[in-house]
Amino acid sequence: MNTNSFTFKLSEEQQRELRQLLASPKYLPTSVPHTQIAVSIPDCRINLYHSGKLLVQGKAAQEWITFTLETEILPEARLGYEDLQDPEAIQPHMGIDESGKGDFFGPLVIASAYVDEGLVEKLRELGVRDSKKISSDNVALNMAREIRKILGDRCAMVTIGPRSYNRMYAKIRNVNKLLAWGHARAIENLLEKVPDCPRALSDKFGPTHQIERALMDKGKKIKLDQRTKAESDPAVAAASILARAGFLYALKTMGKKYGFEVPKGASEKVRREAEKLVAYKGPGVLLDTAKCHFQTTDKVLAEVGYSRKDLPPPT
Image 1 (cartoon, rainbow, N blue to C red):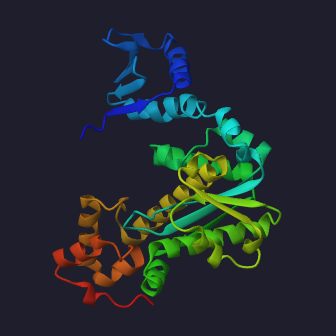
Image 2 (image 1 turned 60 degrees about the horizontal axis):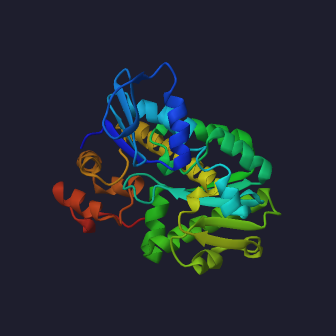
Image 3 (image 1 turned 180 degrees about the vertical axis):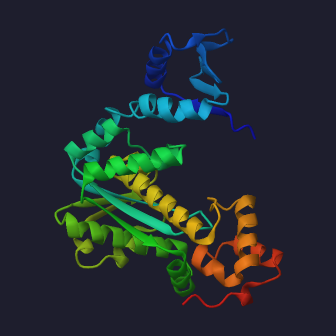
């Protein structure tokens, strides 16, 4: 896979903004068939095709995407349209999102963030968008710090570490129910700080009643909404970045404790690192570092000569 080649589908407004940006003298025009504009900078080629496809290639491609495209083009493409399509986006509400659900190593982190019209404007000026669209961990960490400055005490975070996660999963045997519990706690914690918040919005991951059942007295008074692609909402986008930053910090802390750089996801690289960790520390270390219901656990244990019966119960 070529990690120095990236494609994006741009809207008409994004294309117009990009053409203006690439007209700067710092970009050297080049000739590429079927393009609206084609330019280059050192170690990076940028081609915008008539179809609206943007192709960015070269050793410096990811840097240009992170610090130019994502900060100057992609966020602005949504401004003005969200308020027409979803007028509730700028009304007082909180957004909830999580990070780490699909990662073998590390915790499950759920964050909540409160916004009103003034806070939405500040978040949009910062370029806040769904953390999955931010390609750089450092950018996500820096943006999370700025979000905290903007929101102050109007955000909350719930971190379910591997030991707690494994203990809870052993009891309920359902990821969505565990996630609903975390969302409910994040809502309750933020309501302690913003008791008049009328609505909570999250991405749809399961039946709404799962969260409603997990809510306590304060939370039962709030209107709870779930929808697909909720990360387009400014509050959910802010929560998404805060959750990702919390997850990344947890991985760094784990890495320092166990002496290795903890990889994200559930890839072959993750398995190899887990196998080395188990070979050195024994199978019980997975209870404190990983989500053990993943099938990755069985593969790791088998490779090092163990099985699930060698895992102690998660207490």
